[in-house]
Amino acid sequence: MPASRVLARAAIRALPRRALTPSVARAAAVPRASASASVSATQLGTSVRHGSTLPPRHSEFTKPTAEHIKDLRAILSAPTSLLSTLDGTATEDELASFNDDWMNKYHGKGPIVVKPRTTEEVSKVMKYCYEKGLAIVPQGGNTGLVGGSNPVHDEIILNLTNLNQIRSFDPVSGVLVADAGVILEAADHHLAEKGFIFPLDLGAKGSCHIGGNVATNAGGLRLLRYGSLHGSVLGLEVVLPDGTIWEGLSKLRKDNTGFDIKQLFIGSEGTIGIITAISILCPRRPSAMNVAVFSLPSYEAVQKVYAEAKGQLGEILSAFEFFDRQSYALVKKHQEENGGERKVFETEGDFYCLIETGGSNAEHDEAKLSALLEHLMENEMVLDGVLAQDSTQFQSLWQLRELVPESAGKAGSVYKYDVSVPVGKMYSLVEKMRTKLREGGVLEEDGRPEGPIRAVAGYGHMGDGNLHINIVANKYTDDVEKIIEPYIYEIVAENEGSISAEHGLGVMKAPYIGYSKNETSIEMMKKIKHLFDPKGLLNPYKYIV
Ligand SMILES: O=C(O)CC[C@@H](O)C(=O)O
Ligand SMILES: [Zn+2]
Image 1: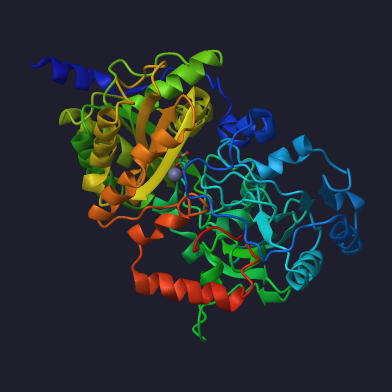
Image 2 (image 1 turned 60 degrees about the horizontal axis):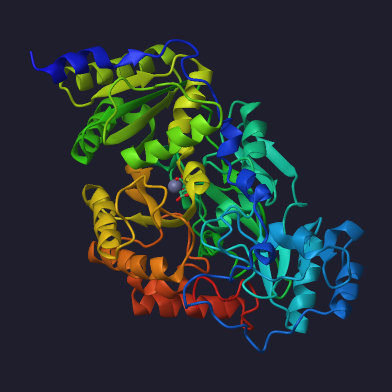
């Protein structure tokens, strides 16, 4: 019998209880943990954006002054709802967490932060800014990856943190209505008590806002199961640039009367209106959940396992994620530095995949999953595998995947790319990127801490054809960025893919939209932007420029 057969037969096993320690708490996967510790731009003396494409300040925008602060204070009900360096109510350092992104890559210089407490206050602030010609950047949890929620220059930061109430939940229809500033995890906890689940889950759930999720059309870890927010969001309340409140909080699943206006705001990244509340259809929470993680020899093997999992698990398959050896190495290192993850796999591989099931009948689900595991073993499709035995292990196994972004962030400054191409071609992009970096003389070998590039990790949402490439550098430099961009967008376009599968365009990808959208599409988008925001004051320099 070949050795691999012995390995495979012995491989998939139940993890002994507590074999995996939750060494880095699930909450630590939330990028904001790093953000709070980050050093401000002023301290670092870094530039606002690396690369040469940072747009100059629009001269027609009014510069914020102390006079504006006086007027805005009169609009806001609480004195603490406005912070500014211009009137001494905040220092630059205190505004850093609003001006800087969590990766410490984008650094704005907004001197004013407003945190309205009601939709009416948002409306009054918007109306005032519109009349005065003041530019605004809407901000939720500030957990994005493309510099979409930070000012580029001196835009007023309108932060939604204080709009944080659940408005209603109907257990018959499953419709939740909630303010935009409710934290995703808080919304999900609220639903869990009632036996329901928020139809979106992502690593930043402890900090990101549901309004920001909708504004950016966040995808996350369970899109495979629950679909995109374009399908589950039923209605929105939005404040338009001139202060008009659009009351579109429909709770209807079916409504074929005219244009579906809400769809324009989903994924508009705060460029045509500020979402202040959402109404969303929430499914029943699965009562039985299982997770298994496998090591595999090749990307081809991952694809085969994916096809098999879809076929055999059918409706109970709720997530299928993959990550490569380099991603796993980053996570292991991060966990070791935080008190140690123990050995998970007897045989490690070049690739890993995580399969999650969620259903309503534990016995039925287990039978299906066992049959799949058996099949994978018999056919030597995996090198090794582990199956969670309890909820602690469930979390720990998920961390092997969820901690990749945070672990990359701990290893250096990360260039992040988020693309979609046909599943079969996905990993070739990572390989091409490595070759390009080698040719550029900045990558010698993955995992070398002293080189300009320390690692190139590929991972993502296999079920959605969504690949994340994280290029870990010793620092952000224009030289490295020029090797990566626009090359990465070119190879995506060659494969008719999207240069932004789920993270949006923000300031990072705004100049590159043409790699994914044709001229007619871009023209239509510009017309829509102009229709809602003729003065171009809302989230300028981003998205469509
Ligand atoms: O940080 C990244 O590049 C990806 C973040 C997120 O979309 C994920 O899938 O973990
Ligand atoms: Zn993702």
